[in-house]
Amino acid sequence: MANRKFFVGGNWKMNGDKKGIDGIVEFLSAGPIDSSAEVVCGAPQCYLDYARQKLPANFGVAAQNCYKVSKGAFTGEISPAMIKDLGCEWVILGHSERRSIFGESDEIVADKCVHALEEGLSVIACIGEKLEERESGQTETVVFRQTKAIADKVKDWDKVVLAYEPVWAIGTGKTASPEQAQEVHVKLREWLKTNVSAAVAEKTRIIYGGSVTAGNCKDLVKGGDIDGFLVGGASLKPEFIQIINTKM
Ligand SMILES: O=C(CO)COP(=O)(O)O
Image (cartoon, rainbow, N blue to C red):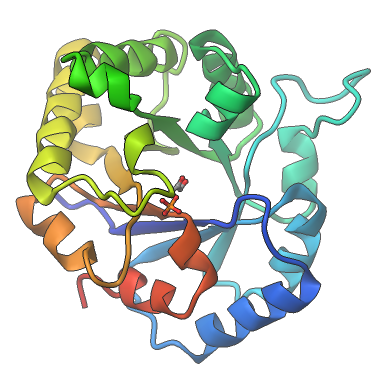
């Protein structure tokens, strides 16, 4: 069994306010938290500073997006340098909502990954197929294409977590079955082995996202290639603790 530290990201998306963050901090601080799990909370950018100040130090804080250069005339954007300046260590990039609602291409996602890594942030890079792509047998083609765009530009995978989030499972309550998720994770790991290196395939954490709950998390990890989760809705609730503690 590979030695990949179990990783759980909470993607708060565009939810909450200071009071809500206080509530999350309260239940996360109360725990108990599996000390062998790595946990990162993705806060809206205006609350990054607040979340970093309030969350215990053993929780990482992620921005949910950033731009591909360090500064300049890019109204409304934030840079990895700014995220780091607030004491945050992570950024979520290429989330399907960024890709579909805000039109982010494979190319821009890859450019953002490269720049964030160069600036010293760790990256949760998201990929995943839409329902019509799965139904037309395109799952592999799509996730390989999205991964290749990143792999063509990213040379150091040490600070990359790859998040497989089938779009049809996000926020729908329709989780991929453990078999469906495991199958894609195995294929992604094989792809990394063939196209990047055996070492990167072995050490890179590939996490699953899409309607993960306290009720399905334990089943999802049974196959062995799901190294954690990226959790949306359930990361705002106390059940996030049970998801963090999947392996405990
Ligand atoms: O998009 C997700 C995490 O990034 C998943 O969201 P849900 O857990 O709400 O389905």
